[in-house]
Amino acid sequence: MSDTQSLVRTYDAETAPRGVLRHILPILQYPQVIWENRNLVANFARREFLARYRGSTLGPSWVVVQPLLMFVIYYLVFGMLFGNHRAGQPPDPNFAFYLFTGTLAFSTLTESTTSHCGVVVGNGNLVKKVAFPSEVLPIPTTLVSISTWLVGVGVVWISWAVCALCGIEVATMQLSWNMLMLPVVIAIQFAMILGIGLFLANLYVFVRDIRHIYGIVTMVWMFLSPVFWAPATVVEKLGQETADMIFACNPAYSLVMSQRMVLGATDATIEGGQSFVFGDFWAHLGISAAWAAAFLVLGYSTFVSRKHKYSDLV
Image 1 (cartoon, rainbow, N blue to C red):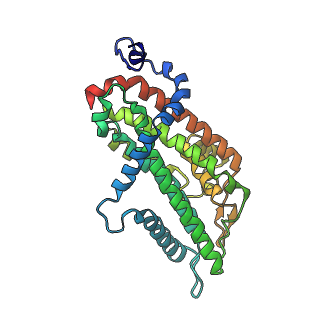
Image 2: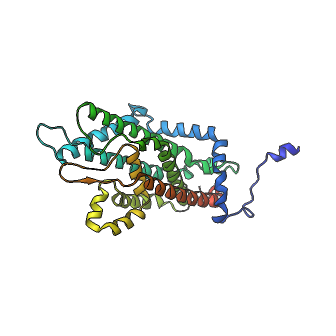
Image 3: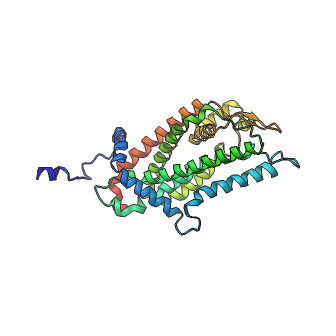
């Protein structure tokens, strides 16, 4: 009888700790919770991945086709129409690679975090079960987004190899030791997406407008991030001090730049005088890791401190 009673989980909403600060240290137990529910996480991730392409003709093949077509469009449009293209020469791939890698990094961050908004509300039947660890719900969405990003990474490298075989020089890309740090960049990206996702999932339970508000925020965020523009351009127009302040206040800046550099991006000045300066890789890695840790602590603590209210609101 005592063994049976020891397996029963109880929860008292009146005596449970609710303060956000009380849940900062328990984040150290989060990996254990994820590991204990690894089968559940894997099944949910598989279900979400297949659900994205259910009913389509190509099915999961869209994971490869979509980024491949995107790169081809960027290559032709920004290499031929808006690049330094000359008759009889192939399109300039430099800005196409720069734009594609930036779009890939930033869109993965924003699209996946937006998807996290509804993970609690969309799984209300599970959240209402007291023993269910609702803090693992954002994990499958994060894993699917990372998997999609890795497919895009493969598209970048394959496109780069094709350019090399065709004799097309890509001045802004080269082999480097930074590529060995890909697992570290993946871990940082995972932590940042999960942290922001936990925070948004919690807010969405109480404020259903948060998805629309976040959509506006991400649109502004994109133009403040080095997706379409090169940092050297901002430094030239605003000065080094102002530019550094803008870069430091943007959590996506170092993440996008470190992801570019881990894919092989390197400083270069292409024909026409446009400069691509990516900065110090290790500095970007450290700053993005600090932002990811901050978001993870904030997201987890707010999520766990309020999850006792979810069953009444979903």
